[in-house]
Picture (cartoon, one colour):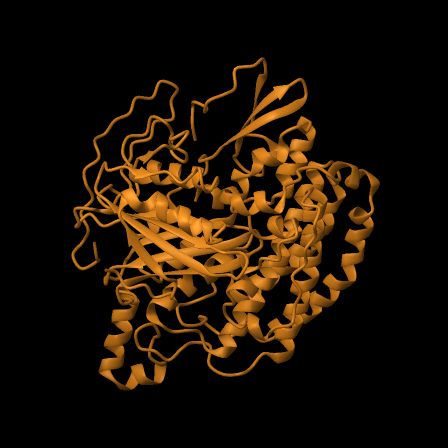
Length: 154
Length: 397
């Protein structure tokens, strides 16, 4: 379990419990979805942590929920509870490839539609993308995985 | 960035493509307007044209190097970005800046807030065809940029912050320069009011335009002046105080109308409040060190380095490897000129962050744009768009 340094109460739920858990928090008055994002730990089988940060306007309380999923496993959408989850879930889908079941309009949001890959995954190389600005550009995927110099972290 | 659009209702409307190259989209925003005559039925913002992968790039920089990338996210108020990121990393370390550094950080952040609101005021007025306001606001913003240049050698992307404090104390004459600027700024604010506050054309273009209710704004994650214009007094400086904001005396201006004019009034009064905060910092600035004396993040003093081999090695390790926070994750938020700007850092025990997530206030505000413009004319769409004060660098990152 990763250490939470900022003192915000943090819990982890299974994907099938997520929607009910968030619904319960909304009923408790957590009316503002501050942030929804993901991060990747490729060493783990359930490599993606999708993080939900909620805020209650009446007293300023905050709480954080996490759900851990493997590559390709879906996460239920919460767009029916928080309308602003729409773009956040699209962003996670775009940059990590985590699918959200029940999302009304799950498309890429930041990258072009024909982009291949999900660049914020840890094993996606930085740089080396061949970008052709021509009108009849074809996608080429000849990018070798990036090898880090020794001692510079992962 | 998308070549397709979402599900559209099947009635007879026209699609108008506005942007990405359009002067009133404040950058490269593409807006698909669904029109019935000249009335906007719906709007579909299409973002991503300025996506530069800053969050990805930060995973390949040491915790110190990544500071320079945060400047580029919201380029109108770089100091808020610096502050949120550094606060998150400091939370991971469990440290804070010494008092003098903390007060100075607040001073720089508030100066940038004034500068950012001035840019917003000038460009918004230009969108409404009042081109003279920009000349006034940029005159004052220039003084802020000159002060920043005096401080750090750079006008905009100052990065004048370090984990655990500041890189250096302020140069001689800087605080006097700030005091002179605040005098001039206070004297010139009535000029802005003369230009806009009761200007009938300005009011006709903004009153009742782009209205949003408080529950809608909260549900859409709007923060900052956009939320306060609906009557919700949510300000990160009050809700989750950081640095020394608890010791300062300032008001959080709110309005209740929730329209473009209310957002203008909130930002206009925030300039006054920021001037008040800057004055208090100048009056009460404590003396003392500007960088925490913690070997994990701070270099040893020059004297020590000249006398001890261990200090030299320490300096070398810190300069090449960078500071290594203990594994964990932390979120830190600041009140940027656009709202709650938060940074979530995940550290895995190496010298590079595993993930830096930026919670950009403009991203949330822009998502609410369709609510603001439905039922208005196309020209009012421009006014509503300008009034939510978004920065595309922050939306797309």
